Length: 350
Image (spheres, rainbow, N blue to C red):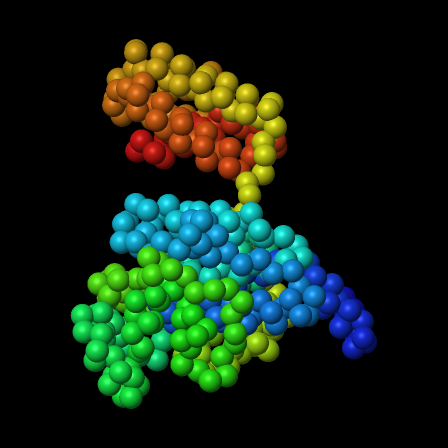
């Protein structure tokens, strides 16, 4: 009837925002082709957040594989196992105080949607950082292959701004080693360059570029989206902080929210009620003819009999009804379970 509006003092509002930020477990997903600077940008973001007192966990291909193995992206089965391992590693590290950064190619939008659902189920924020290499991937693959075939031509290519031959032969699958960085002001990496066996073959790079599904900010699982081209462009740290710690995370929906646990008594009565209906229906149809209306014991609903029903058909519908009811348990429905199941059968069979 009457409305009251209270103004929150700025200092109280700031404290509330700080408390909310501390309860977050943000997830940062890096996306991009190999050698687009993802690992370099990951380290830059990690240092910035760690300098502010945040605990940061970095999950990458090497952390789950144990080494840098580029050939995994040439085998669909191994790549699928890698994505499952990355997702599990991210899920294990999500906590109320820590920030998790996923540093991988992440070129499949379906996998990015899984990560979005994972963050939403954890009631946390997520942002996507898309790293783009300034050189067109197909042209770069051709240049890398040409350097491997004819090394003496590398010196002339360097004058024209091409990729150095050392990069094409010893290229890290996630970043260019610091000694070969084209950017003058790029961050220095503390890790040594990876061996040549971890390099991506030109044919594999071309294949990844062809099947790469670019992020789109119109998709809810790809936003907020930050696109960074090359290593010269500064990382939008302020915008990333705002997306992680100041924006309220979306609430979990039914597909990401844990289902409530039903009591043992509810499950037992559900099983008994549905079994009772099946037994009574199979017995009643023995003396029924199409067009009859069946009244089953223990129910107040009527069942129109139009054709003989098999036990296999009814058992399949019973399993479906039990699976659905277990996801939405409600003790108030216990007296009506037999009627609810008979209504479900009537709607499913006619």
